[in-house]
Length: 248
Image (cartoon, rainbow, N blue to C red; front, side, top):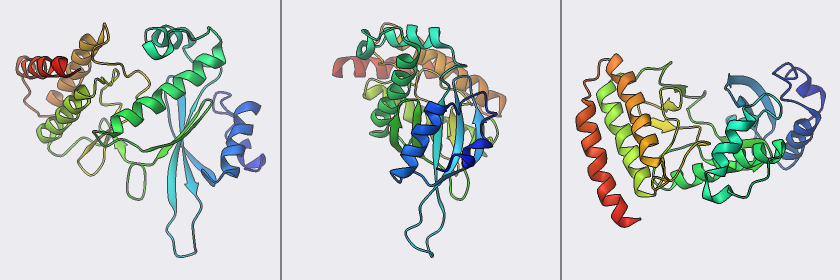
């Protein structure tokens, strides 16, 4: 990527430092993407961009990928470090800011790969330091979060979402930050995103986090004309947990 093509993105909270620009250029040189075309959203930890991929021939339609860039400066480093230390895969992580952020991005990549075995998620393409490249969910443009594209049939959408949550439980995974901000509406089907805080169900706080995720969703969907009874959902989850615990 020519340096000047990244100049216009410099204003995004210093995310395009020289280290990140150099690595974006390296990924582009490898053919992972062709050019960044727009800024999609900005979260607490990262910025999300839309990028094109190379066409094989003139007749091919333009294909897109998502580029998620974790900030090297403006992020909650302490929270990342504390959460990583509770993950058995990273208990020996060093308290180095860059190491923590790179590991955080790697953790999300690994969690998405795991979730992908049972539910629809953006296909992860490449993780490189603080950069994560993923499939774009959507037909001709990125699918919107359910907070911005409320499902036409909220009860049905919630039921499918619960099926996905239970499928993840079966592989010992809890999303950890599930809400209307982290589910896409892809043609009236839920697609989970943002897996950096996912934890094993049998983690010391796994079940508590699971209930928190589901309570967030119940609140959102009931505000949007669904009729979900929290007690019934919790009973279903407990039954599924009992079966899952025996399998893990």
